[in-house]
Image 1: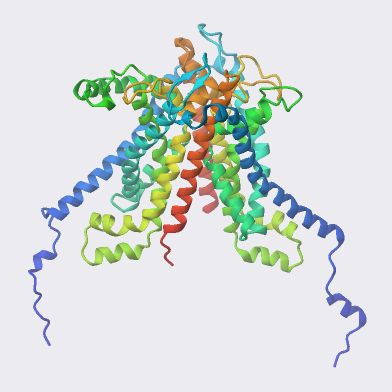
Image 2: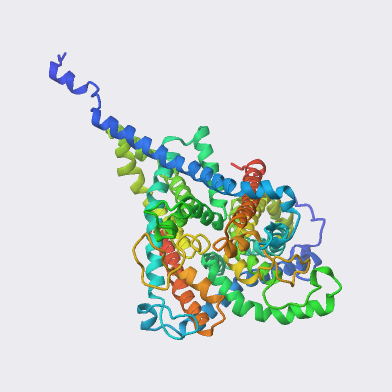
Length: 320
Length: 297
């Protein structure tokens, strides 16, 4: 039997960590907590800044601000209905066009319809489209897309002019080109999220569907899309939030008119476009009215984003 | 024992393209193909026009001279290029340390628990805040209150607005990248007696470097093209940059201002600026892609 010496035993006792090391550890943790809480501070700060600025307008215009459409800086009468209507209509119509295109593209590049190389190239190109700054898309919309689109919009007005949505003659900037540029901007988001959702559908589901004799598209419509639906809807909601807040491209092409018109061919406005145009030069109650509109925009995007997260969390099917 | 005769004729197992289900299939495939074509068409159209319209004006003077007065020809966008770099640099210097720190907290100290969940949800909401609202916020908090030495519009204010925009992306990428680092690595480090601080800064963060770097490069590229947060924070200036606490030009705001001017010279300068900006941003995107591919091989 070997008897251990005193010093040997010492070697194996737990060392108490030096004070400096412990305080560095604790300090680092504290630092990361502070940095993480900055997110909450910023959110609160954004909300309070907008809310406190909007209080004056809320007090003087109340809820009628939401449903009246006069915007008259001379007489200090403000109603944001035109902008709210423009925000909702432009983003919803953009969504109606972009969802089939985006989901269709996502199916095309995930479901093995074409060789892998081509699929990857299309995927990369859609991602690069998302990287193009919105101000460049706005420039392109002013000088390229709108002139190209004009004859078609003219035709629409001449043949369907009795329909309220096409009741005015197109005169350049307007709601219709703004909607199309929004489609270009949200298409990459919808495609990317739908692609991820489709990729996460387990291979066994596809094999099962093909095994019982379904064709590719029967499998896509009846098995694969339903399995991916919750994430796709979540992605669509995120895209809706993005479309409502999108500023530059829309500002440059929508015409910035505060006169309400049902026609999609007439100039319109959105809340973000109105902010971009007027906030810099506004003073007095107009600033407050603009901040009131900003608050509405913020609440709309909050609601849409939270709903999107809730849908994804609540309805996502989990496979192991 | 003999096999039972199949109850269907053998030719029904052969693919028959004339069947209505197969024709429907082909129809839907062509529709999906058409949709993909429409989806990538704008990229080509935008790139072609930016290359043609903007490429015409690329010259040395574009990169060395100031923009001309409205209505005049010539000049360059040198101050806007410098300005974009300055504002983006300020934004990165704020957003990267804060975002990586916040991500470290979420991934390493509190992967569950109400506070971490609260911060994660808050981060997603912050990511969804429209960029123009970020501008309004910074205007109200910094520009209108003249927080920095009594200056109103400034390059720093613009940088802060962009940082608010970048922060959620940086936090999210760091959080997700750190979660992918194998637990064994940090167990090993703790096991040989490293403190938590040393484990994170020497072991966990370096092994998650590539995905974090990719995400940060993408966030910077996105911030460089943002206009809405800058138009009433950094404003614009037709002169050379005069320090961090004065209004500063940027490429994106220059494109916006010059695109809506009724002068042809200004419009073509906007195209040339778009050319430079799009090249920089696509370059950064390809760089991020290359980092990812380089690391995975």
